Length: 633
Image 1 (cartoon, rainbow, N blue to C red):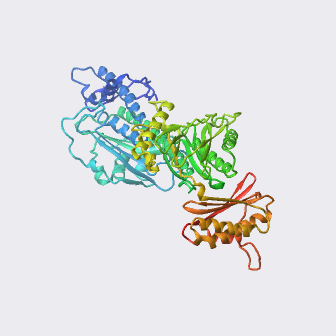
Image 2: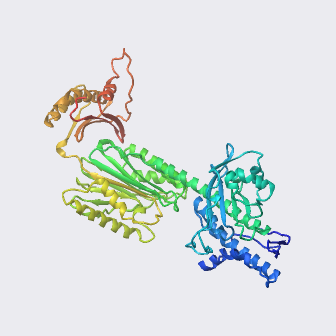
Image 3: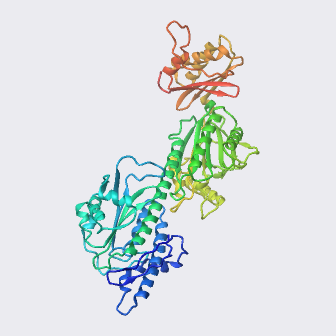
């Protein structure tokens, strides 16, 4: 901003003439090299030495003005390098002490308003940082060393941490004026005890040795910066007020932007974590483990997700996806796609049809939304897995003997492209094998391409499996941790979602399966078949409960069914019973009245079973319940 200042004199009697059309801006041509910027930052440290007995005042004023311009350019660049709030305040302090002042005290509003928020309650300032001349040279250069460590002063324990600005007080008047002021002015002198406390205010001696600069953002004052100089140094001049104004303006704008970016990143991260499953649902014949690592703070939140969805017939859907981008929109789109996928999985659609429907949904949400997704369905009874891919990195199957294989699954186009078909493949899923689903943040970085990372991941899995031997697969949780260790230290550009599934399967002798004709005799036959299976498995103590529940569920099924009803018993860590029919309407639990003859079947199931539910199929439904083994109820 241009300014015109009248000639002023410093404490040494030297006349300072400032050019009338000088522009102070943070967008000057950057100085080349660290040395030049360091010299710019230290240019005004010797301004008290520029005026000597043999130096013409006009030449000294010109040098002093040039030094100030160079200093402002270097200081604003240093402040602008800060990414978050702490870095910006640190940049202000490091650019100020001891180049411009010998000490600085920074207060910020608490809480700090973000964006268009209207502050509520009184204006409260919190002490954010105090800096004094360091005892040693700064490692980044550009600061003059001092001969000895600074002596302790009252500034080291300045005032109270919190300061409430009372309406109409001297501090409120200074903040309302917005411009930096000398602390020898009556209003500023009265404001110091309110800002620093009585003890802190005594650290500021009389005279023009301190500048109080409000930090004003785009809409409001967000804090203050107090610049102090020791008595041995040249006192602040009127031109220094302009320098303080530039430093305060650039710092306040940077702080506001950092606060807004931090709020958006927090919301996106909270939204993303809230949309991820808190716990993985228990599934028959498969053990699950998952990990999620957010991207580095510089990359902000992303759109990676994973999910497991129980399906009819003791099957389970495994899903992992990645929405392109790192912002709040990506996290929101991830939640929409995950919700859509859960709904589609509940319809028991094939994997390729689920991806096709997700593709259409993404196109309805917008034309610029792109995501990758891998969807797999595991059947523990047949020991098979069906996989469809939409532009996602391929899964890796770790077999029991330690062999790790990158599965050959057609890549397909990403979700959101439109006009493409997806292809599913069916593969063996032997007992003891582990399927690893992941997002590209695990295998791709600045230092390696995605296929190099996939090969390294495959080798890591194989090496980990060899440690436990050929007959014992590695523990699932420990395997996930080992996989993440391959990332190493450093900045992550993308978030990571990891889902591991250990296939236990269900042995054929643990499965009993029958077809029942939809007739009145079906419930009685179902009771006899269930009793024989429980006797064969040595679970006779469950016969009474299981026969009662099977009879009630089969009775409800044959009442409306037109095709044979299926009855299946599964013996795993629990006893699971599944009854399927061709009627799509799902049963609902109702409270039967005392005069009703029926309506108590599901009530008994709800009271006696460990868990129960109903799932709609393409051509009917499945009603299931589970009973703990070794318990009769």
